[in-house]
Length: 378
Ligand SMILES: *Cc1c(COP(=O)(O)O)cnc(C)c1O
Image 1 (tube, rainbow, N blue to C red):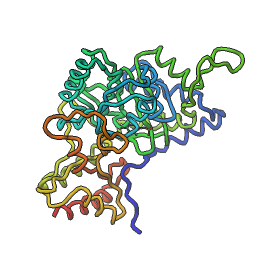
Image 2 (cartoon, helix red, strand yellow; image 1 turned 30 degrees about the vertical axis):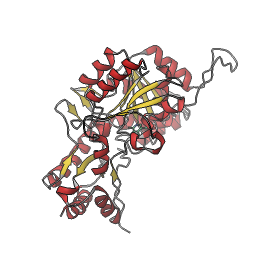
Image 3 (tube, rainbow, N blue to C red; image 1 turned 180 degrees about the vertical axis):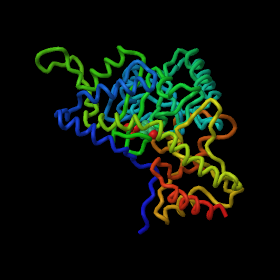
Image 4 (cartoon, rainbow, N blue to C red; image 1 turned 90 degrees about the horizontal axis):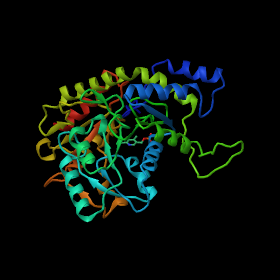
């Protein structure tokens, strides 16, 4: 069997073990401790927000963001359709109903014009959403200057899913700083990792204090265990926060490396008929977490799934683009706003794929990937 080439695997720098050792030596092997506090400070400073709260996953952060915005059973919320299910699962599990919004071709993210139509309809029916959940897909920021004023005009707060865009900027400002609440993911497949973890980000100190209370079992101030309400166990371990601190220092390098991977793919494949790469608008600097492309079957003579199968035969992992939420069995019948005539996120799913994009992908391995894709493109 040939060596496996992964889509996106953890990339350690070496210093992680020093931080972990420090946690062991000081016996801070607990879901609190000096690494957690430092990692929170360092992430807040990096993102350019006042407060950060380290958690066991990005999904836990999304869940807390929903609670902090008082998302309740029976509410509706707007959410980008072209994303991973964890973006909206916590809100749905609370009992809220999504209204799904298509993406625009310029950024592959929430279409401002579809969002505007959704808001107009909501205004007419008197069913305003409790929140708008935006996603920075594959590291690419949304068009914030068009989306945020629209949400502001209707007085609806924004949750920014920056799970995939750690280190990406919009007009030179870090993603994760745009939503009332935003979150990063440090899952093993993301650009930096703690093996599993997440970070809730906000300028709202009171809200983050409440998140701390809820994520640590909601204990009242009392000498015994007393609860006026019930909480969750969502905290990040001090050992993992140590890994995160070392990884965060490497982030600028990791962004440069992933962008270089993207550029090599583009240089090798972009001139093939029917091939297009996920664009990068002038206002964006994407971390290029994953290199995403589309293949037009008519012009290319092949199809995304054929390329994925050909890569799999060489033990190379690749994936279709996220299957949009409005096409998921679990969201059958849910309201959906298209960008225009075309269902852009459906087309992107049907023709799209993500190539191995890790910052530890060697140029030789990337050449293998390129060869297989080229052969399929004829
Ligand atoms: C990874 C991811 C999440 C979830 O983060 P976890 O840390 O794995 O819980 C949420 N949204 C998007 C878009 C993601 O890619």
